[in-house]
Structures are given as structure tokens and as C-alpha cells.
Length: 171
Image (cartoon, rainbow, N blue to C red; front, top):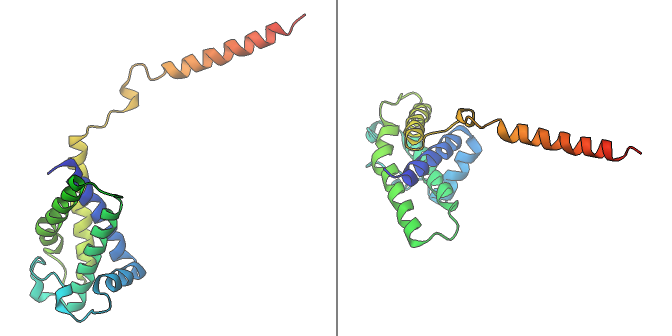
């Protein structure tokens, strides 16, 4: 998985979790996704949801709308994408739908599917962030032996300027 795809997935999952957590955002996502045709089963990604037959139509609709809205929100962040970026977005989208939707929907509580999905998403996102941190190691500024040099140099410069102003004004 590329760094771009990992970032895309992390951002998509953050939006997804937010949409599932806020009723108004979820209602808006359903309306935008279905364009008012909520009863049409084409708006439920049955083929990718783990144990989709055990899910209610309402939960499948909410899940599908939230994931579609999250993908749209992340994709919108790339203004005027080049064909290369469009291909990367499409690749990341496919990874999310093909590989991560089954993981998001696995082992969910039938009494509260969306809460279980949100918990799965949080766990998956944490794992993706950990992998991203491994790829891009964080270097602390405190590991730098010269970290205090700019501060000391600035202090000396201010002190020298203040001293020259004070001593130059004496008759």
C-alpha cells in the first residue's frame, strides 16, 4: 500500500466515523447518496458487507451512505486533480471498498451494528496510523544536539543589541 493510499484510508475513516456519530451528517449523507430514493436496494453495498443478509435495510443504507460520503469528502480535497491523482484516488477507493468494508462490517453486534462498525473503524484507523508512522519516522527536535543553539544565539543577539543601545546613549 502506498503512502497516498494509507493517508486516503485514514482520512476516509475519520470522516466515516464522524458521519456515523452525528445524526444530521448521516441524514445529509443518506439524502445526497440516494437522492431521495432510499427504498432502492442499489443503494446498499450488499456484496461487500460481511453477513449482509443479517443486516437491516436501514443499517445497510446508513453504512453505505456514510462510506460513500466519506469517500466523496476526501476526494474533494484534491482540487483539479491530475489524471495520476485521479488514478490514485480510484485505487485507494477500491482498496477501501474491497478490502476494508468487509473488515469494518465483520463481527458486528446485531443490536447496534453502526456502533460496532464505528469501533472497528477506530481500531483499523489506529493500525493504519501506526503503519504510516513506521513508514515516516518521527524525528523529535529534542534529539537534535543543536536544538538550543537558535535560542541561545537569539538571546545573545538581543542582549548585544540592548547593551549597545544602552551604552551608546551615555554622554
